[in-house]
Image (tube, rainbow, N blue to C red; front, side, top):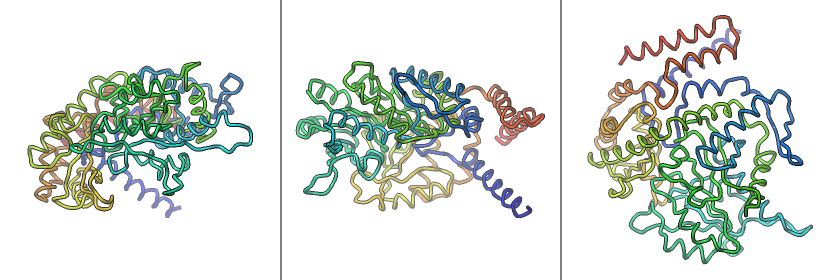
Length: 485
């Protein structure tokens, strides 16, 4: 028993130390991450976290295969409604547990949809051709043949490679699409699926251009937008479903500040061209890709969606302001920033830095981490290999939520420049700077959050007096953190 206790205590201390470092001492600029609010985290550990709620449509009605699911059924319906309000759509599939799974669900559904009318005995065919963003130009791994697209698109018998054609980009700005060449490729190849969206993402995608081009085709492609990185910027950055996209996918924990889940959404009314595709998406979500779909995080997603619907305009506006201010400040200090200065270098939460002159991206990212600044290295469009990346990818979304504004990102740019350009040690300066940004914004205020969280916590563990202890502990932590500042 003593060995068991020692292991538990040792692990607990490691967890606490990591929590303190990530939440109180370091500045997180990784563009694919966010810290959920206290209530979102509390939802994640509530009772549904250990439960099942498998269900599917059978003979026109939704059939649940477990008892005790009435509550979670209500939660799922309400989450669909809240997200439908956010995206302006009628259909939301919530069961994918990641953005990559959401993409795979759509790819599976596309193959099933394309084979609906095949004669009996005829083998199922794959998608004939897909167009997407190239991996080395920011395309997300999940939309590549080596990722979730694997096995769902035909191979070219001459090359042995999948029939995937990448969007062309402008010679003077490889982060922007070339509409003229894109139109030529669309006409030449007639893809069955067009996948927009990136992981290195600073400009809008040409959705309306493609939608207008193909709207009168007899057999037009499905237009999909992987919004994983920009889901929380829906509307202010781009509004794909209003611009002509048929379906959007995404993860809910980047600019959308929820738990780690995925979703698929769109407008597929009865009688519409792709209504049957939506039915296939639902069936590929369950039973095609999921069984238990992490019901604790479903509760958390509803809470995060409440927050997003309440604070969307203020949060999104500040994210864009901060990203542009951060990019300009870095440039002013001599740090090379990708993108066009006329566009403010970025239209999203991301700021891309070129550091080849100062070293390998892996090494620079490690130096920044050693100085309490968390980023990730990134291969830029002209890099030959991901093993020698010349870029650093950063995002402002998490620190925006912790209260940082334009002037604060100006200060932060100085620390980043000191590390990259001068190889200076700014670890303690960054730790001290972070003490100004410990209170989360764009959610229920701390005092109210603590009270609600304590009540939920009490209901989970049912220890006498636990709620009161929880409130006192949190209040002491907040008091101590303010005194440290």
